[in-house]
Image 1 (cartoon, one colour):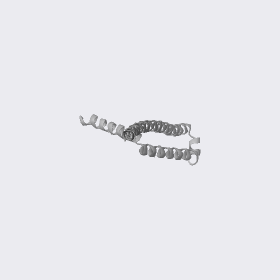
Image 2 (spheres, helix red, strand yellow):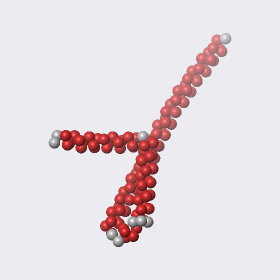
Image 3 (spheres, one colour):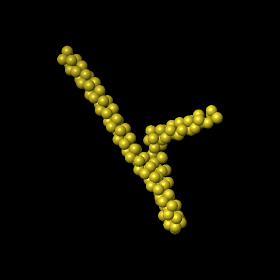
Image 4 (cartoon, one colour):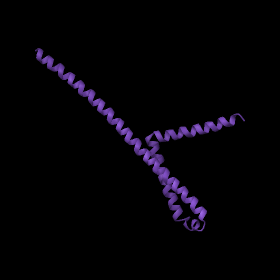
Length: 123
């Protein structure tokens, strides 16, 4: 009985870790976005073509199915917005790093130019 809560805790921790990895790494996030979009499109197609007449006769089934599709589409939209935000943050950080590297290189060039001037003046 003592092992039950720890097993549930391990499962939750593993799920959170997996979600963290999927969101933090661009290739995994993009693959998740692609697969989610594909599944949503397939669900829309299935709901319209093969299941259309069946769902039309059952209002509860119709509502549940399309609520599920709506939730899937909302997940895709939120994941796409998150991906856009992360890309902008990564780009901004990289631009700041490049500006710092450029400033250091410019300072080093000024120092070298000053040394060359002093050597020429000494001759």
